[in-house]
Length: 143
Image (cartoon, rainbow, N blue to C red; front, side, top):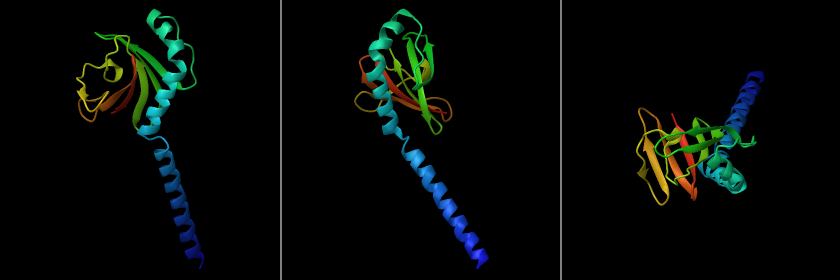
């Protein structure tokens, strides 16, 4: 009887862990990440755009894990939001209103629907970008 009780406890523990993992992954899926980026843009675009266009310092924002300015033919300022499991997510400001690959990598974008593009780098490197509104785009990148 004691052995059966241990097995039951083990099964219950495994089920609880699986349920918690499923809730974590489902709660941070692509739709939620896009929504978070849209909210970020809605909340901060008017404050950030004048700073980004002039190069003034960016304030610390609680949603942002990091931000980077990437130069190139079309510069961008990328805001890394809280990542999903093994996927970088965030948004970026494109002064030229041109969709770009993650970190402004010189990788061609392939249209994959209205206001959406995907890219494929070497190996498993790949991602998507979606237009949120003029000059602002959402991104996902996995490596």
